[in-house]
Image (cartoon, rainbow, N blue to C red; front, side):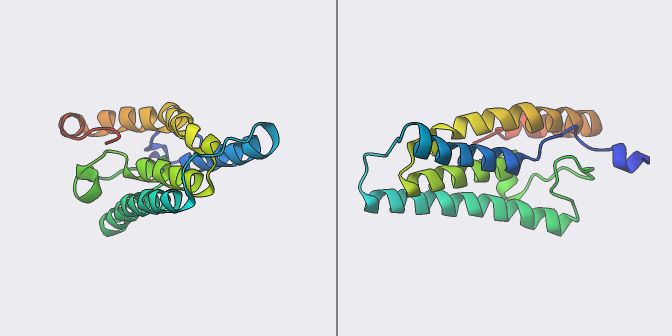
Amino acid sequence: MDDTEKDGAAVRVPPPLVFLGLLVAGVLLHRYVAPAPMALSQGIRIAAAAVAAVAGLILMGGAIGLFRRTGQDPKPWASTPEIISTGVYRITRNPMYVGMALVQTAIGVGLGNLWIVILVPVSVTIVYATAVRHEEAYLERKFGEPYTRYKAAVRRWV
């Protein structure tokens, strides 16, 4: 392994798998353990789900677009050549993860499955423990003061 392969955050679990795994867990809990329907009309659920899904997709799409424009790899364990602090990164330091949380929420609300929605904070907590804290430590080591200033100016989530 050369130096560029070692240059990256110590993320071992791909965050999309965390969100997907807990979404599946919510479906299974709802179906086989204890159904947890939402007491909202279908119209309200669909409208709320659409809003959450669009917001999540905008955040994720904006982040992916910035990665492409700057020639960076969106994988959290890949080397980061520069701090991106424009676009959706002015709103949150983690637009991909916030977007994934919003999409998980949208799916739960759209399906009327409260378990999926209840598991969103669990997803975010696991992603924080397995990815975000490692990414932040890596970026602080690599970029120092510029990253510290960015952290002070932009919230981790929203």
